[in-house]
Image 1 (tube, rainbow, N blue to C red):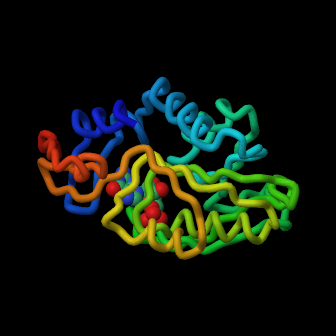
Image 2 (image 1 turned 90 degrees about the horizontal axis):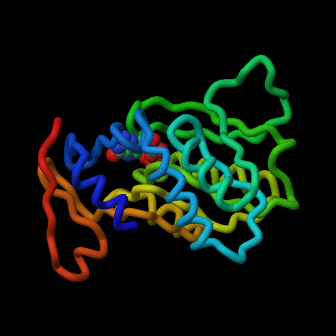
Length: 204
Ligand code: 5GP
């Protein structure tokens, strides 16, 4: 998605060769128009799949799952990281190790909101180590629902996430695929094909 790549170049801050900060438009302050556009893009890519539900994980997947849900005309569900007193005991659970926070937590989804009749699209902001998405794939499998695919806003293709998901036979569509980065420089998948390299300003 060209508009997204452009925003990453203009506003992204590359904190290291593994961490990209995009909190001015994606995951702290959110550009609502851009978020809605990502939802329309996923709806186009997965058109005809008869998706019944979008699944994500709190917190930064929520705005994108909502955008995809709006575009597809279906509800979205988000996996919770902490069990609330209001939550039922009948939940699907998976263990996830956080890439940015270094913590391990149990994520849960109430069994009432995902079941054998569902066709699910998983959406998240980043695909990095794949831990969060592998956890969500596990939850979909526990529910007996059909997994249509995974939609990521930003994929860091040089990390192991894509490989882990592909090993599980999951179809992945990422709106921006970063093949490498370092402070001051980012390379996207399509650019590599055309051997065209672009740099972004270092902003830390
Ligand atoms: P995972 O390593 O499980 O694929 O990524 C888990 C979560 O870590 C993502 O959903 C995202 O919220 C966060 N994350 C991973 N890599 C980055 C990054 O480079 N920048 C930011 N801001 N968040 C990231």
